[in-house]
Length: 294
Image: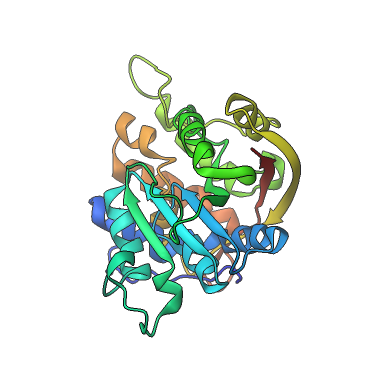
C-alpha cells in the first residue's frame, strides 16, 4: 500500500470545528493511511500470515488490523478512543462480531478480527490461542508523555503472549528526516502562548533517538532489531492536510492554549512550503520501528 492523496469528503468548509466523531473520521479517511507503508514493512519483516495471532494496542480505526487480517492473521485490537473503535468495527465487523460470525461468512478476513474498548484483551487470541505478535502502530516520540500509558499496557499484554513473542513498537524518525516536524513545531509554539506557560501531556516535542528503546526497557522487553520506513504524507489540498494533521491529537495542547481556528490558520500557513503547483501537499517523512522479544 502506498500513501494516497486524500480529498476532504466531509464538507466544503475544511476548517469547520470538529466534534469527536468528525475528528475520528478525519483520522480514518485522511490521516491513517499515511502509515500504511509502516504496516506493510513490519508485516513483511514479521512474515505475518495465517499462523499469526496479533494483538494491536491502540488499534485506532483498524486499518493496520485489516491489512493483517487480509494476510490471514487472527487479530485482536484494543483502543480507548470510542469513536475510532466504532469505525474499526465498521471496517472489520460490519455485520456481526467475532462470536456471531458464521463459518460461511463471505468475509473470512473479518471473521478473524476482534475489537475491545479499553479492556483486557482476553480470552487469549481471536482463535483461542496465546498471541505471538503484539504491535503498537500509534507512533510515539512527538508528544510529551505519549509513552506513559503504553508501558503499563505492554506489561499487561506480555503475559497473554507465548514465551519469546515478538513486540513491535513504532515512532517518528529523526526530525531532520521528517518534513512534518516543521509543521508540528506550530503546536509547540502555540501551546507556549498559554498563560501561565505550562508543560502538559500531549504537547509536541522533538523526537529523541532512544524513545523506543526507553519504552522497551521500562516494559521489560529485549530489543532484537529495528528498521526505518518512508511514510510521506500526501494530501489533495491544504484543507485536507489541516484536518488530517489535527486528527492526530498532536495539536490538542495548542488548541487548548489558543483556539481551533487560530491553530488551523497557522498550520495552513506552515504547510505552504510543501504545497505543489497543482495544490496538493507532499511531506516526506521517515518512521522507525523497534522489534523486541518478550
